Length: 163
Image (tube, rainbow, N blue to C red):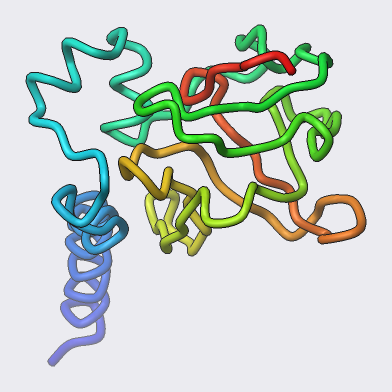
């Protein structure tokens, strides 16, 4: 086989693999909805959530950085899932990460689940609500002590309940 044909075939194979990536990117990243304590139909989620909340919680979208009022929430209290009111994070674990999203170094016990997300072409750890499976954001290993973790959450996926 001539080198030019082999090179062209390699390029086409890489392009086809890249085109298929978005199709498989979300495959297997979250457990089935029925596995969660709070399980609603798509129509029920759309009724319960605003369109922006639905996009984040149910379609794993990401809100624009610095757009959430919760980024500047500094009162004592608890951050809850906007989809099902599950308690997720204590305000005591919130910190200013400079990223533009509410960030925490530790969730409440049993509040979240994680999965692998390849949507950007590399592995990230996605975070979801343990009760309803709603997408909350991602966790990174560049946070403060004591955990060294940064739970970077979409403000649209959260509600705040003052103490």
